[in-house]
Each structure stands twice: as structure tokens, then as C-alpha cells.
Length: 511
Image 1: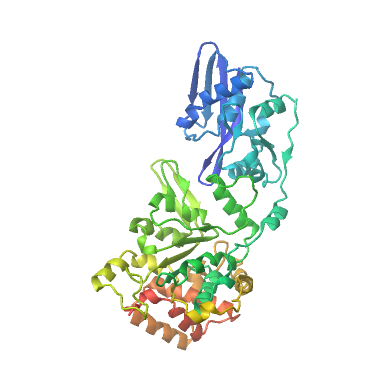
Image 2: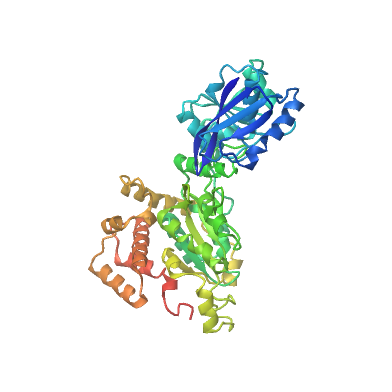
């Protein structure tokens, strides 16, 4: 008997329908075709043990299973459940009159239990597009999939529940999520707050500019100056995520299996990989491509602590994603694209010893050591970082001051107000949401300079030997500074402030 069961494969952050055809005929054997990987090929052992432990059996006949389309590679153990249901239906051990209405996915344990899968949200989205009315999957993934409206989602704990459901012996309770209510309920901010930071008022203002315009930023200062403390608090002053951003972020995290027993991810991601991270882990890819840290930081913050300690190759592969806000993994037979719109926050010591700019110490490296140290970060990468900020140690008087500092909520109000100006400005530009994303044409339209401002920028370009990309970055930051002041036009004072945030472009900046 021939039976068709439906599953799904995840490719990038999208899903594709997989039709699993199970035919049982005369003879003996188990033949699984359709480009399965080893995890799929091994499913017959898990299925056989699971069926035996719930008083069913793997039929002693010739079982032929085709997973179509045959030219798409099937990966992982999530096909165990649809394969088991297909075998039971094709061997007439269960009756499944409405099998064609459901997408079925789940990994089987040997006792018939069902374990979580990856990519439940993109699978649910695609199931609705393909006209399916239901989705049967592990209970741990049910809330994640139930975000999709008009798709009935059933979370199950074991194979027995699935069999009873199809035979009409047991009703499954659908998982229901009010997406907007869930989004509002989970909308919260990180526990780290700028009120904990003593002093550093200038640096806080720079962080405010970065948050308001979505600008990349690098903090340069000696150990203990507060670079990491400041970076961890940046997400607390970013505007709240929109529902669309939450859906995008949840979709990416779903693909790598980081969304379990929860619905939407409504807090902006903060990713802080160790400096030993590989190129693939940072950017994404691999034999079976997976999103990297830059995609997991989508709509949030990627913090690279001690930037020069990262492998230069790993840093260089970030250059294009920083510009395009997406990363494309190309292979001989396929190409996959992951979103990567994140704010880069980097930190570094000013020298190998860490104390070159500290006026209270005489420690300092040789020019050769400094050249080698700074050479770990390429000019093109620094060009893509809008704000270069020097962080000095906090004096004792400020550390001992018991007066509370300004809270993140207060700063966030100003940041959100500046973002409102940008939303209005770019309302007809679907790919531009804030100043850091402006194109060259948009820079010309929204960052027009008067004679004084133009002359000031010209002098800075000539003295600092700035690149054309640095020129664009200065204008973007200038527009953000003006937005924070509710100014419709940029002024020479805004230009002057933006220029001073290009520390690493100045020769002898550490002297």
C-alpha cells in the first residue's frame, strides 16, 4: 500500500515542503531514498525500537520510502515521526483518513517519546502557505509554531498520542498564542542599566548617539575603564522591538533550536562570542549551513570584546555583512542568505600592554609592537565603524559618588524620539529604517551642508586622510546628532562633534 506523509526541510531561514512516500509491498528490505543524510538513514533503528515499545511493529516486508523532491538534501532526525506514521499507515496498522491535512515533524526516542526539533517557526509559516490546516510537532516547540495564525498546532509528547489522534480515539488540544498579547507580555528590557555606571558622561552620550542612529561603535581604553560594562548596557537604551522585528529574530533563533517552550523573542539579542571563535561560527556556513553569531544578533547587538584578539580572517569576513546587513553563503550547488542587521560594539586596549593612553603610567610599547598590534585590525573594517570612542578610567571621586546616574529609561526616551524622526524620514524606503542604513543618495538628500560645515569637513578629510567611506560615516553620525537635538538641518557644530568620533583615523591618537 502507498501512503504519502508531509514534512518540511529548513533551508536558510525558509522551509520547503517534503513529501514522504511510503510503499509496502512483497519482499523483505528497508530502502530509504531521496538524498537523506546519515541521521535520516539511521531513523529505521529508532522507529523500529519505538514501535516495538508501544506494541506496534516494523512490518517484515519490503518498505520503500521516497523523500521528494529527491534533489534536496534531508538533514536531521526530525523526520522520525512522519516516517513512523507513514509506515504504520502503509501497513494498515492505523487508519489515517485526514493525513494529507497535516505537516508532521519530530524526533523519536526509543520508548516512543518525541523530542524537540529545530526550525519549527519557519516550517509553520511555510505549512500555512502550502495550504495545510494543521501541524503536529513536539510539545516543546508548540508555542513557537502557534505564533502563526490560521494554522492549528498540536504539541505532542509521544507517538501513542499521534496514533490515537489519527484513529479518533483521543482529541489533542491545539496550542493557541495571541501573538500581539504575547509580544506585549514578553516585552521587557535587560537588567543591566546605565544608572549603574558612575561618571563616563561623554561615553554615555556617544552610546546614545550610536543607539539613536544604529551606528557601529568601538571603545578604546585601558583595562578596568568600563568598556564591557558600557557595552552590556547598550541594549537597554535601544527602542523596543517591533512585532515584525520580533518575528524575524524568532525565526532565526528557531532555525538553530534556541526557541523552546516560549513564543516570540521580544528582547533585542545581545551576542558576545569569545575571541577564539572561527570564521564559520561568527558569520555562518558549514557543510550544512547554519546562521552564525552575526545573524543571531539580528535586530540586536554583537559585542566583540578585545577586538585585536580575534582572528583577522574572522574579522575580515564581517566586512560585507556590515555593509549589506545580510550574509550570503555560496556553495557549488546552492546559495543561502541569512539576515544580519546588527549593531557592532567592539572594545580594545589602546596597546598590547593596555596602558598606552593612561597619563598615570609610564608603561608603553615600542613603535614596532604598536604597529603589529594595530595591524590586527584592517583599515576597511575600521572604516565601517562609525564611532571611535576613547574611554578613560573613572576618577575615585566619581566612583564614590552616591548620587544615582541617569537611568536607561530616560536615555531611551531620547533615543526613541530620534528614531521617530528617522521613521518618518524613511517611510517610503523599505530597506532603510535608521540613519546608519542610509544610502549614498539618501545621505546627499538628508545631510546637506552649508558653506561653513562643508569647509570644516573638507579640512578634516585632508588632515586625517579620511576615505570616502569615512566621509559617509561622518555625515550619518552628523544626521543622528541633529535628530537627537530635534534639528531639521545639520549644522557645523554637529559636523564638529561627529569628526571627533573618528579617533583611530588620527595619526598619533594615542600620544
